[in-house]
Amino acid sequence: MSSKKKKYYTVWKGHKTGVFESWEDCKAQITNFEGAQYKSFLTFEAANKALNSNYKDHIGKSKSFKSELSPEQLKKIGQPNYNSISVDAASSGNPGIMEYRGVDTRTKKQLFIQGPFEEGTNNIGEFLAIVHGLALLKKNNSDKIIYTDSKTAISWVKKKTCNTKLEQNEKNKPLFELVERAVQWLKTNDFKSVIVKWETKAWGEIPADFGRK
Image (cartoon, rainbow, N blue to C red; front, side, top):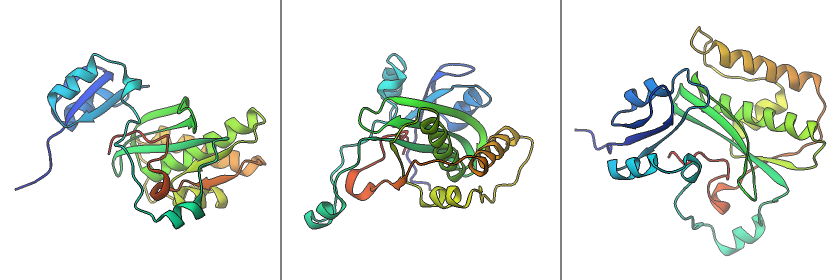
């Protein structure tokens, strides 16, 4: 018998809005809906209450964090550089419905968001988020750095390639078109922005986290 806890899904923007009792029902409302807004909750009451409030009040909200690292380790790592933007992706399944976004590290103000895409992976989303961030910073001639919690995505950006094992099909064609544009941007643009690994064990979830864990 499965010990997996039941979840309830609030959809603020979708083909239909409301609280749905299964991921399949939620998925039907957000698939192919640009700018869909949704999140899971552990109780119907919490999901229903959230429906009557603002989506932005719930996205990215995570439990209070207390690092398990020693004071010496924390001192060595130091504090985040707040002259930065943070990027992250969320994928419901692997592959599954995926989206990514970037926020100001200090204020958590959302700077960009893309998706949801019908079929993608977290690594692809992380890669696209970094490139999107790089393009934004270059456009604004900004000296900010970029934080990501994905070593894989950092390596892909350095190699100027998206080394995904996901095979292209009709369902994910729009996503792969975006990937191709991102790779082409990396190959044809110089950028000065530094990409840095977010220290999750020291600082908690990255500010761009979607808070759906």
